[in-house]
Structure formats: structure tokens, C-alpha cells
Length: 394
Image 1: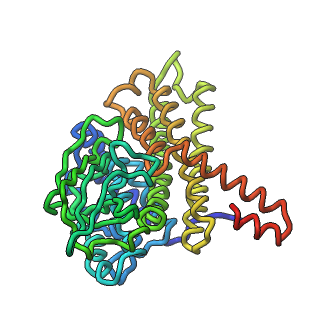
Image 2: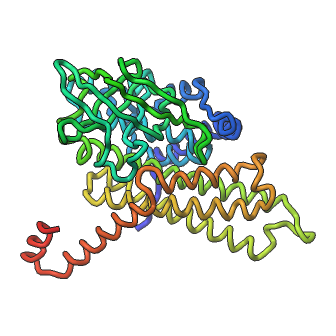
Image 3: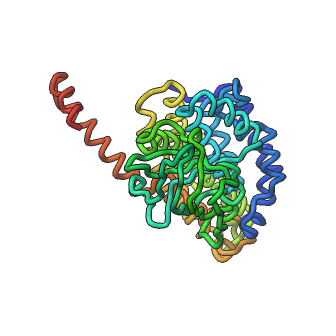
């Protein structure tokens, strides 16, 4: 079976690449150093329809297929992982509302998300809670016509500039997802700086001190917060990070090809050294492998295959670890220059490490993938009747 992009997907790919080469690549290093994303760029991204890439057309979205959306994330990730992370968190929130929001929430918020009029951020992590999302300490108490939120959130991507946050909290022991506007009473935002990678993603810490949230801002039902709303959004987040990781790896590959064509050592170009050729070969192979896994995950999402969730975890696992390995090799190939901000590979290395942590760390993916493998093996070893019983127990 030949796996090939359609003519439309190739056209989109060319459009995305041209945009990134012109608007992002020349400035990404400066944004990283300043830890800032210019609002003019976000406006251009919104005008292109990228913030509503996968929202239905009825809400002003582009209704892109998931492979095309993956290509968009790859290309923007190739230019700047911080900017790509805006797509991640914004679309995590928009997809959560699209899936679990009621009619009025969809009609009000989705057109604003699609146009970029409203920038959304995903608020799950806390100072004491990361991978163990079900242990969040932020609380919500029902009081009259509002929920009263108390607690903190940390590492919130684009939290410094977001207009609305999808905040996860516990209400009487049940998890809930709440849309919280930045100007809500009792809500404050504290910028964070000095993080290892994706420095331009304007990360923030959020504080809720008797923060009043209207009843109608609850997304889904109480008790749905983690198992449904968060898990659904995180699946899209993992796909964005996976394809964005391919973008980092591709950027490293391109940087190394250019560098080894220009740099001489021992009177020959670096590309003539066998060990350099070995590393380039490994880069090419791993980039292609990770990209194909992402395409597979995207295709399965498009056809609503239930295996898309585990395939997305596999794609995220391989793509993020591959990006980190390739970025490390890219710095090694560049030698001392690779440790300087004059060359982008040092930024790629820092950003790639973040990819191994966000939207489910490498170790969490290993646990998830292994459990899935054991289940598949056990189910394939029994007769149909026993399979059904075993599946119920699993």
C-alpha cells in the first residue's frame, strides 16, 4: 500500500511552509530570547484560519482533515515550537467545547475561537500535580448562580495572553471543566520565565481566590472533567505535539545538511566524513518513521477508528524521543557552534526536551502503550467467548 498525500494536502503543505519560512523562521530565535510572541504574528495566524483549522465550517472553522492539521503543526513546529504550542492549547479547548459543550456554548465560543477573536488556554497542571491529573487540588463550590474556584494552576501555555481558560477543578469530589475568563473576579495571572524550552510560549501561573464562574460556563457535566473533557482534549494535544516534534526533527535535519555542506574540518567538508553521514542517515530514517506514524494516527482520527487514541500515543512517544535524539546529534555535529544562540540547533535541543514532557511524558506513554500491548496479546490468545469476558475484566 502506497501512502501518499493528496493533491490538496500537498497544496496546504506548500502554503504552510511558505508562511513559516517568511513569517516565523527568521524571527524565532529573537522571540525565544525575549520569551515573547508578537501579537502581530498571532493576528496573521488567525487571519490564515489556522486557529480554527479543525473546527467545523458552520462555526467559521476550516474543517481540515487531521493529516492536514498534522502537517500544519509540523511546519509551524519546524519554525518555532512555541508558536506551534499556541495551536495545541487553543485547539484543545476549542475541540473540548465542540465535543462536550452545550448548544449555547458552541454558538457563542466556537466562532470566537475560529476567528482568533478569543485566545484559549488549557489549565490542568498545578504546582503539586502533573501527570496525576485526577489529584488536582483546585476546588469549585456551587454557590447560588456561580461556582467559586480556589487553587492554583502552573505551566499554563500562553496563559499570559489568553482570554479564556478551560480550568479543571473538583466540586464535591467530582471533576469539572470550567470556562474562566481572564477578567473574572478573584482570578489573577503571574507570568513565568526562564523555562528550559518553548520560551516564547508565554507560560503563566494562575491563581484563583474565590473566583466567581457563571453556572453556564461548566463544560459537560460534573464528573466528566477528567475522563471525558480532559482526556478528549489531551488526545488532540498529543497529536499536535507529535507532529510538532516531527517539525523539530525536520528542522534539525535541514540545519545539519546545510551546515555539513559549508563547514570544513581536516580539509574536507563535514558531509564527507563517514560518521557524519551515519548521523544524517539516522536522522532521515527516524524523521520519516515518526512522520508516517503521525499520518497513521491522523488517518485513524479522520475515520473515527477507536485505535486512534493508542496510535496517537505511539506517535507522540516515538516522535518526541526521536526529536530529542536528533536535536542532540544536531548540536554535536555543530560542535561549539551548536552551543551558541547564533545557530538554531541549541533552541531545537531545548524545545525537544519539552516535547518529551508535555501532553503526557515519555514514561506515561510507555506505561500506556505497554498496557495496550498486553491487552491486545491477552485478547488474541483466547477464544471469542473468553475474549469478551477478559475484555470486561480489563
